[in-house]
Image 1: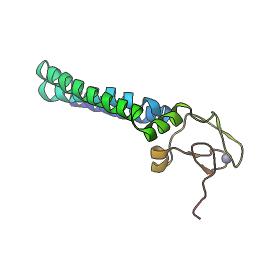
Image 2 (image 1 turned 90 degrees about the horizontal axis):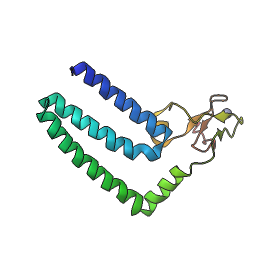
Image 3 (image 1 turned 180 degrees about the vertical axis):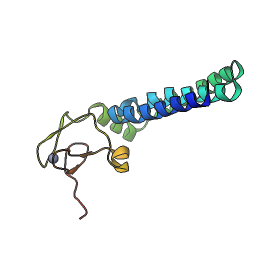
Image 4 (image 1 turned 30 degrees about the vertical axis):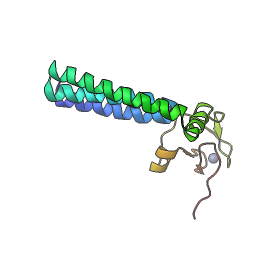
Length: 143
Ligand SMILES: [Zn+2]
């Protein structure tokens, strides 16, 4: 595989991860585990070729996937706070979210306008432009 092919694959994986995290946060761990493993294998093959890189990459990816899986289980099982957050994600407030200000229905499929929205969720209402949190409540502006 050429360097350019790998660049395209890496770009596609990163974009895919971002989109999937936005659409389904509970899938985030799976995406991280699978995506990270693929990246490790791809990097190893690119560096050392087949079969050396492939074998080494698969070995490292296996360790990475295992550690990530245990980390995921720990978060899901042990931490009360983590469990509460997971529960919130699993039972997400009713869709569609309604804009508090103008009553417009907000699409579940959205693209973050700001870094804050990317990290913590939230919306910009397409009808009235209000800044909303994840449940459609209007944020107090700092004007
Ligand atoms: Zn609105």
